[in-house]
Length: 58
View 1 (tube, one colour):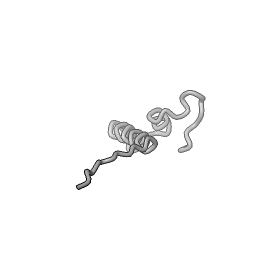
View 2: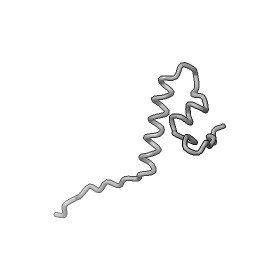
View 3: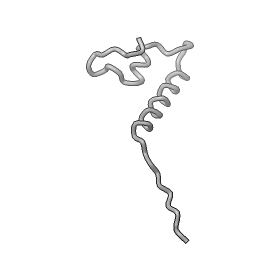
């Protein structure tokens, strides 16, 4: 009888995307308005903070 080993594969890009989605959900649940502003999305996703770039969502 052969032993069955469970292999886990980690997709680091997928895990990072899941983490970012979670951060957006947390920010959205704490927001006062109906939607997050583009500036708030940039802040949560840390987009353009280092180089002064604008979000592609604008």
